[in-house]
Image 1 (spheres, one colour):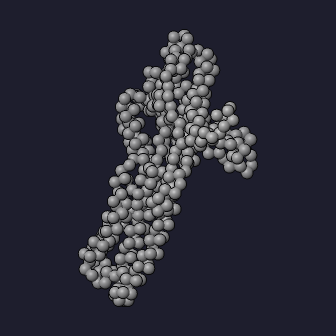
Image 2 (cartoon, rainbow, N blue to C red):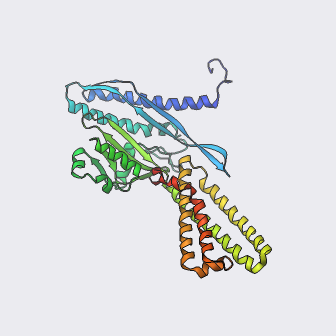
Image 3 (tube, rainbow, N blue to C red):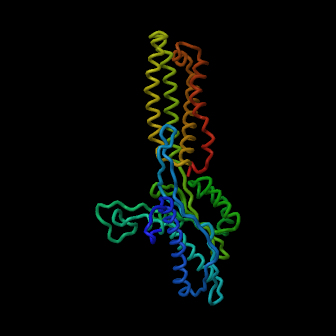
Length: 370
């Protein structure tokens, strides 16, 4: 189209699609270039096999009062699902072949963060990671994450790096539940499954944080070949904790409204008590909606689910605590509802927790606690 001098069919979708395609092609090109440069020095013969991978933008809807206001693209994700190379040692040395496969796997993992970083960082607007001459006044460019980079960052932070071989696992069969307890259930399950299959796993001691991402990076290697998987796992624990705090405050607000309604009816009369309660309810719920909008703005679907789960748990905790208070201090709880029986207050206080707790099952998502 450009050669013909026409841009009528040059749409944003085509441009963005070509950009994403260029990144994945660049990853494969860099991988092939590294193969051609390294195989002779390593005493290897290597040819590429059938491989495939994906590179896509992460779409994140922004809601206002339950309606999608706009869509943001907070990041991109590269996923090489299958990489095959036909290689062997020139001296027919299997150990050399295994070592070469390990080296190539580490390099390809590093490309998963390095290639997108270079494509989506402008040196004129930010300082690239590892720049020898950073420009004063410019912010650091956003950084990507990969398995080998996660391990490197963890090592820089002083974390222990565990290389769990089949021999180590045989001597310490509970190592996943002891040394790796800080990781999410999902990460530990994947590590456990790999170890049960006789694989070698390298993982850092605890989750790390990088440019808003929190999670783990680990490698799973077949010792007999040197081939394996280089994996990152991330999640949304912060969203769950924020939802929990919001759930507690929301349930407390409902409880306060019930208390004010009961006491104001006794002092202002029925009409005055109802009006006072409605005014207070309008103020409280306006604050609640503002907090909800600000807290969930820009969250992904996964983070929003975690937030809802935390919200439900917080409401349920408040409901249980208030119900216990009403049961053990009947005089206080009775006075709160115009001297009604303590049983009424117990039921009223439990309602906020039960209603907010409708989203409680989403806290079972392991990714909320990574």
